[in-house]
Length: 224
Image 1 (tube, helix red, strand yellow):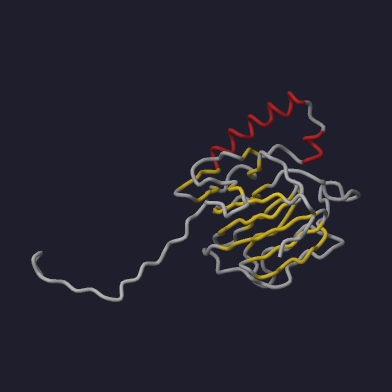
Image 2: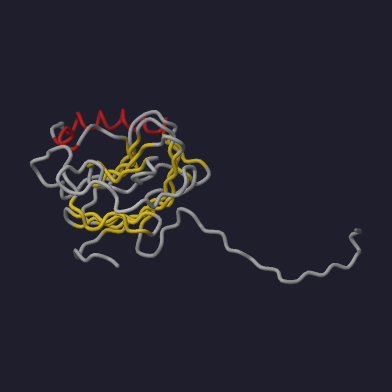
C-alpha cells in the first residue's frame, strides 16, 4: 500500500495505562520510582538501636546505607532487591497509618513488611496458607483469613492499616487480617512500639516493590 492511498479507520479506543509511583490524594509516595529518597539501611533491632549512643548509631547507619545502595536498586520505576544485604527501612518513623505497597516474588520467594520495626506482614510462596498474615504472632492469629495471592511472578497489592496495636490487611482487595493485635517480636512482654520505622524485609531472594504509599492517621478512626 502506497503513502498516497486512502485509509479508513473506525472503533478506535484508547486505554489509559496506570501511572506508577504517583501517590493518590492524601498519601505520600515513599518510593518515587527513581532513587532511594525516604529510605535508609537497616541497623539492628529497635532495642539495640535504642541502646546505641548517637555517634555509634550514626556510624552504623552510614555503613548500613552504603550496603543498602549496593543491593536495593531502582530500575524502571521498580524497586529491585538483588538478594543480598539487609532490609530497607523508612527514614521516618510512623505511629498510626494506612499504606499501600505492590510486591512481586519469584518461586520460593520469602519477604514481609515490618510495621513499627516489628515483623511482619508475611509475603511468601505458600499457596496452602497465603500471604498477608501476621507471621510472628504467638498469642493472636498469625495466618490470613483466606488465600488471596496472585500467581508467583505477578504483582500483588497490600493495603495495610495500623491503629494502636491492631492491624488490618487487604491483599488484592480481599480482607485477610481484620483488626488483629500485632505482637512485639523483640520484647514479648511489651506491646508493640507506639512509633517506629517501616521495613521491606527479605530472606536473601530477589524481590520487587513499587507504588509504596502512606497516609498518617492522627484521629484514631479506621478508614472504610
